[in-house]
Image: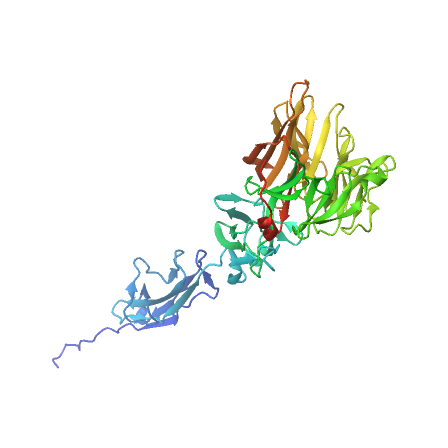
Length: 519
């Protein structure tokens, strides 16, 4: 080496050390609510400054990967837009003159968000029942993570709580919405007498998300036998008194009983719920139970002997008791009797002069009007207890034909100051209101009722003659019914020779075997 010269030396090369490896957040991540970040810490010898570059990868590997543009700090905020899935990230640390070092891989799992509403058991999304069953079983349980609502769709109509043949029940309460939480709804049904399957869909919605539960109500019983046929029954005079049944649209008129030259002169009829017998009354107010299978009649109340003029007789919904009003002392009071004529008893208290008594659909209450039509409409428990006047007429007004369209509401006819209307009110008399006002010449006679599932209403309009040369007019009407909304007319006919109209059921085989009726 020459004097005065020094040996050349290379500067020290920085060495990078990662002191904190990136790790996924300890809290579970859920799509739609992602927070948190990945963090790395590193040093370099020789006082070198370190740099960072984050990468994503499709596998658990820090080889290859895709550079994440702009992410060059020691902390990487996880994108809020990540969807459910698994993601892999690593960071490459550099320093001037140093060999880059890649971190270990941090694997981030993003869970799918919990649905706002979901069934506890997905198999319960299909609810089924046979025609004679009144519920689909135990119903369905769901969890809602926000306030929820339920809508029932039948055909093209969506209604929150008024599909007549299906109700959603939480315990004893009809329910179509509630707070967040876990709930069980039972699907309650009216028996299906249509002869065909009917379907509906329950749509449950919470926080903008929806699930559906399908309902199928079969058109037959489990053993394949048909349900009774839904009919309108009435008395037809003219060429002898006959009891007639027809389908609600006016088709299929059949003779239940022909009184022409017969032993009995039946003029009023109410069908038993099973459709194989009826309670009937003749022109002398005798009440009978008439067996449609055998054609025999059993007298259970003798109007001739007592002179008490029993009124219209109807069945309890369970078919085990008959209700009618009859004079007891100076007052008409509600009575009950068994179909075999036993256990006749007065069931409403003294001081209540009643006529036109009917049971509510559940059989728990009786609705009736005061005998003279100008007093009140009253309710009683089925045993006659808890009497209550729910509507009282104004002076000169008439209330007539009270009929419980459901367990909560009644229909009735009102004639006030020349205005004749079909009205509705709560079972306690609350919120009375007219549904339809008729031409002043018409008023509803003592014939007003709805069918079993509340989808049809029938009534008769009368126009009494005021001049000797005028003839009495009667109009027999069947209309669709949606809750308390009157729909289009299903059947309308001159009813000069008709009276005592009621909905009911007839055993399908018996109905098919009856002879046809012609006016």
